[in-house]
Image (cartoon, rainbow, N blue to C red):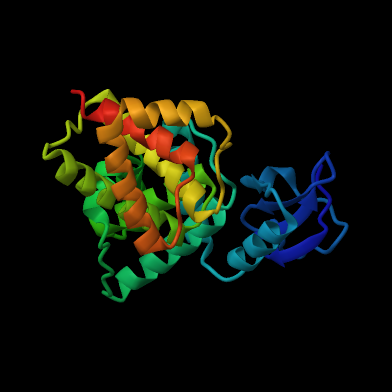
Length: 277
């Protein structure tokens, strides 16, 4: 049994789980005519939200008190569908960021206000699995709420998913997406080739660039102490290392950041692999 510690509204209350962690309980009428220290009716509990920090819990409390219940219900269903199909660990923050985004998108659509996704083409290329999850989300929204959202929204949903996978924010995710596209263009221009987007090496390169971008924009670095190996890679793959230097110069000019020797080494290895096919 859960004891109510705070009433948010008729459909949401705060409680504490068996570990002593603060949680939010959702259910129709779960807070109706209740007060602190009352027991929540277990038959009314539809969803238990457990967040990783007090600040996130406070944000979720504010969110659920300010948007329609049906938006929260459908967004929770979408997130559970994402977890089921992707089988990846997602930051709990997605319950806040994606719900807030989709509620606003639904209201915009009802007002006939369209918001184009300038990165849709890149998102469909680089985050294919997450984009498919975004398309499924649009179907769920249509079935549950009768609202038709544009394909652009599937792209935004995909960004929120990758954001939760990488534990970053949506602004950084848009920068990472631009970074990936620009690096691919620099690579194709340098080698004067087209890349095989169906190859395993291409897929691994994109994955490397995602996490590289995450480290870059969060000011994280990989351990930089294997100088002998770095020197060997620079010498053995001199052509590929030159391409890595071009990419490094682009990053310095556009984002005012610089790659470490270790990042240069890994980038060189991926460039070598992706251009061997």
